[in-house]
Length: 492
Image (cartoon, rainbow, N blue to C red; front, top):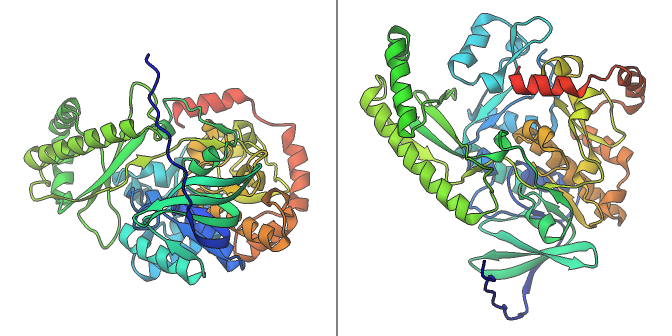
């Protein structure tokens, strides 16, 4: 291969646009939560976002599902900013969520409602102990209302917001991050900060800071794929259901034909009350090898292919499937769905072994429902996430919020979804504010003080001392790694 050509960019002086205590790069769920919590804790905070709206995958990616708020029994574990957000959206009619009486229920009517909508993975789990299916506490939201609400929450917290601004590079002093360069229509500018939070999802800032990271991912995992989401509306779902029920062989034949043509036979029935007769296509793009969300040529190719396949699907459904005759494409996601990528190597890395214990870390900042691993989940229904998963090794002045937390790909696949990223962001923003106030590096933040602050914000955290006895008794009974492989492969 010939040597790649390079060209030297001339040195230049860059305008310092602002100085702040905390600078958050990326306005997805983790970044928004970081900015709000940092600002509410008294830090002068700036949030920059590359698109013209906040929300990341939850809005621009049309991934509007906020799942796994409870375990299979219906016990809620995620609170904090996630609940505040759902409450605010609920007042505006911008959300639909599992009724309290149905959380943990095995009632057929409740289970069938979500299975019929093809939303079972987000709302229904098999109870390993009894074999019955139970309903989880999950929610869906309207992206356009969510965009507006996130603007209000960020600005209402006192944080400064700058949209249409792409975090391009970090400003380093020895091994510490001291600010960021960003690009926009106003040119290249700089923001100086005492703590920088990388909420880009792909770890753009920690890569620029030369922090250690992990990019390994099994090609069979959803986190190795890219996706395009698009919505069809004006669908006569009653007519569609009648056709599917009365002519199942014909329906199966049509869907097989659509698949052979390269279309998408599978969709969710939208359950937002103010958007009736709408279906959601979440079209993952499995490839012969893992796709790379950091490769602009791949992103371009997949985006073009996905949109062509979306139109092929629409034309086919409209022509051949009863109920779709008067349908039309409501919108397509302006942002290609990225579900995983680079992960920071933090002071602690979560692995599958952490799902096989009830250990509560002294720096636990989030408790998440562990719903997807059969017998392991039955015996260990929650996973505790330590603050150290947000703290890079050896690089100071930097925290990570969102899906790039320190984790093996096996953990990241299940615990990198929207409410989890909000929880990581709330912890990162709070820790950043505490670090600034104390004049210390983020890695030196007092765990007890951080946890106490998060509890005041409504975050659900267990009592460390009460948990220690339970941990000692369960460690001896930790399940074998073979169970993990068994239940992950069967999907139970």
